[in-house]
Image (cartoon, rainbow, N blue to C red; front, side, top):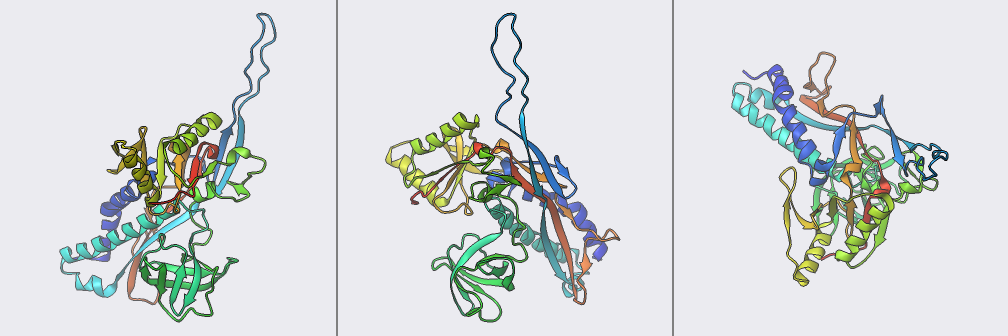
Length: 387
């Protein structure tokens, strides 16, 4: 007979390892390249010494003259607060009792919930890698009834629960609304609940419920225009500013110029290129037009990619339109307090009843954030005309 205890044990022993593996390696090709480590985690913060520039204790001299004066490495301290990443499954008491006498039925029920959790976690975790930490999904351009017209739907999916914040941020004007429909052709999203006209206006923006300014510090933060990064002022630390180029036309010369700039400026060797789908198609059009063979590579995690001089070029739905990132992935580390774990109560149970409701929940958790050791060793080409 299936009980909550047996279900609890199944989540701990059978599902946790599979879920962690899926979320660590199968989210997207970019995450699979990043090292995940528990180093430099101090309490609730990541504090990391990042070297910049070169050692100054080098010089030439005479046979009997003085040796060069020592001048050690330059270091700056990065400081980030660990982000709290959660994923929750919910099973009703009725469903548990209905399948109590059939282990097969209960396994199917639990399997379906876990697969749904993995899909949702992959979607949101993958999205965060390209965000700036604010959690902004899109901006509203118009509101009519329950339908919002937005500037992009690439970060949206049916079933997501979102907040709508005013253009100044801080307090949501609408909280915990579920997305019922996404019109990808018209750029519109329908939310449940009462009408939004008069409450939501142009310039407001959507975030995942309760997540404003609480998400991973992704590529959007590194290549953004904020005054600070990892607690340091960009104005007094120029090496925090990556290479950025605007070019409507994408070709081998444009890409090579960015790669050369990284090598000449920072001694950084690019090993991964990720772009939007339209940019990837534009590059493929360029290759076909110039009668160049399109080489295909096999990547870690079972992914495939086209190649630029041996560097994989992949597309991702969450990369901003018209944008290509050229990265040295060895500079990126996902610092974590621990790997994915189930949130446990004082009694060690992970499946718990929701107060005053006939449902049981279990929550997956990870405390982590992403740091790039050398922002100056990364490049972005934007404004590319997509195909």
